[in-house]
Length: 256
Image (cartoon, rainbow, N blue to C red):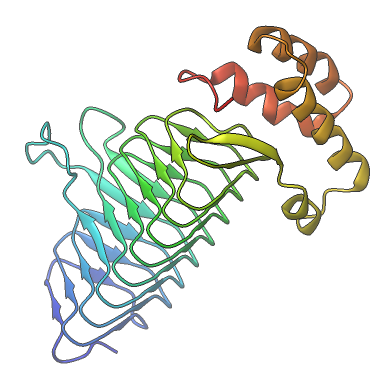
């Protein structure tokens, strides 16, 4: 199922049913799992591991060297899970020796055209990144987050689970779980209530998360004071535990 016009390095390992389109280039030290479809003119460089049932559209560039002047050819990795979709002109770089040595992308992610994922980023599962969203190096995105078109994320930022960013948002601080962020400069605009309902959160849970938003953003409390109050609430409201843990681990502070 490899087009005769594709160039596949003998050192690449492709499952028997992988499809490779015309003029695609697959380098050495690339592993591709069963059911994956690689479109024409796509370029995949190694060391890269790609799981099962992924779809890589034409002109995507996957596994290139990091755009980091400190990189000097060290053996670093890109690891991609299962059932991800990467649309046209998506670019994803491998990691650097200065960090974990790898860029990782989980499962069931939907990565639209012209998205860039830089070195050492870590993406979870069920993430949507709309056209031209851009991640600098060392960014972490948790499960179910949605980044609107042209969202730009500064290096070392963290994007929490079930969060949502509007179009053309510039992020230089962390985005806590469940929050909606929009505007320039970026500001919190409430919680991602519709997304939460679609994912099975019940009315009481959504109400509790809305109350947590008020504590964090509308109570005139300092961040440390708000966090202390959220710790108390999370003892009986389990959906707030991930929010508390996120805030406790934040090193760049949060969009506020």
